[in-house]
Image 1: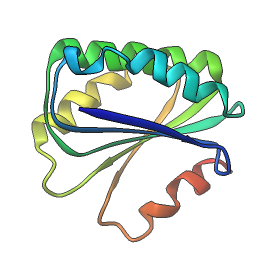
Image 2 (image 1 turned 90 degrees about the horizontal axis):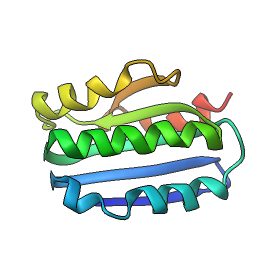
Image 3 (image 1 turned 180 degrees about the vertical axis):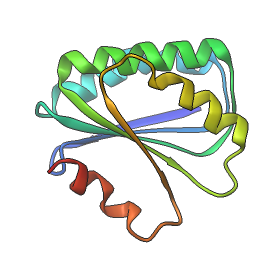
Length: 125
């Protein structure tokens, strides 16, 4: 399952994944992400929340990676991944594979970190 929204005030796109994520769950992800990116200014931040993600298939990861790669043409400057203590190592590792050769800075923060709520604002500086 996934959800996506844009916040024009903070120039941030939020992408959340929960449960078991398969490529079938992501049929509208690309279209939704492009529409959401168009309302943001260049140099926007993508916050990817995987705190409730239990598992993700290889094909779903490829689709997510393709979509994030496309967001660069709309001005994606930084990605922040939100995890928590209960996020499985397997999910962390799988999303960690998406870092290669995208040219987008990626930070990983813990949802329990009291300063994580201000991460998008700090990343826009």
